[in-house]
Length: 107
Image 1 (cartoon, helix red, strand yellow):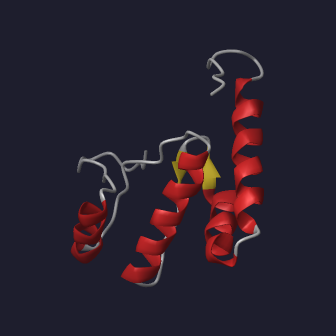
Image 2: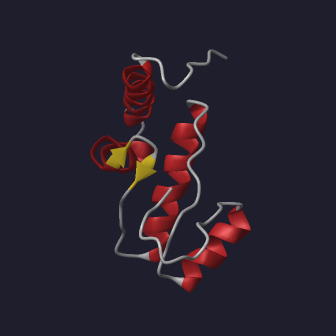
Image 3: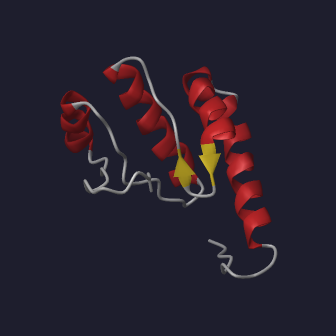
């Protein structure tokens, strides 16, 4: 595994290039296509902002996003939700959620 220290001038570029590489790699698989499109448009550094119309769709998108970024040795974590059903499904699958706070951000 290769590591890039943050604070180096090229670090943001290398991070973005690594993520784009993995998005392209997974976008060849129909199962990951929608998630790749979301990652391409809704990922800002290490924050991903997206929504879904159903609990099943939100679960699938979150699982696929975690899997894609895990392949790049990146840890997508601390999901926030407004559905207790989704919270329960995430817990069963080991997907961590953000702690509740007055803060309006997703990490």
